[in-house]
Image 1 (tube, rainbow, N blue to C red):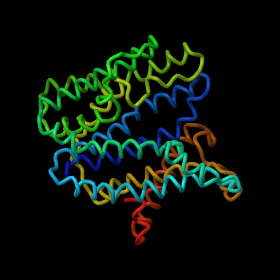
Image 2 (tube, rainbow, N blue to C red; image 1 turned 90 degrees about the vertical axis):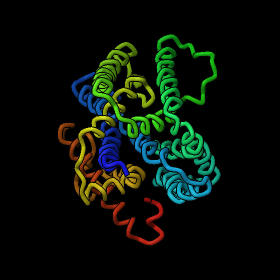
Image 3 (cartoon, rainbow, N blue to C red; image 1 turned 180 degrees about the vertical axis):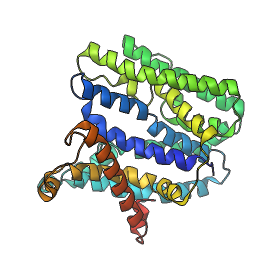
Length: 334
């Protein structure tokens, strides 16, 4: 077990929740509120990439039969996938259950149109299928570096397309997507980095963060509406920030404790369940019951954002801890 993995997973899930708390504040004209939300978004976009990097760091170094690997992964992903995709199909129709259709639900589940955050499940399943192949690459350092280097270079193809609307003609799909983060996590975790390389990674992280903030501003200003290109998880600037956060924790974080272990163990469940609480707290039912709705704009964004974030994080964590203690039910929040 990597000593800083729990801390990274814990902070990453909190960053995910914060992204979902402030996201709607960016869909407005550029203002103080827009800047407030954009800066928070820019400081948290490393969250999902780091989740994938931690998974790569923990999984790629193991040697086990294919059958054992897939049995372990299946026990952790199949039940949550089936339950939560169906749950959210029903949840999003909660005020119009008479319109719910099994046929439509199955089509949505098949095509990843269930709920805004569940794309992560589809992505991680794809990575799991490729993990046995990636393990062979990870055990050969030069090949590992080669793959990550090609993958990172291709993130600039996104920039080229954004600026010119032209895609590269070479078919290099095998290097595309979140697979690079999976291998990058293992590369950074398992190999000693010189001081010079570490400083370069930190410098890249600072540069990437500035590009995220001001690139989003200039792009939005030019377009006249929100432009999210520079906060994309696969943009090169996000890669730089994600690598810097990972290395920072590797070199500096040594805190351990029962609460941190518990929170990290609940992180996947928190990811799955937190949209329920985000929706609940801003609903008319909650407002009728307590006299107010809780969301990013409650009273003022300087109040609504942190309070909503704290309440959603804590209640999601407590819900997962409770569910994890119930036989059978605990399998939906592994």
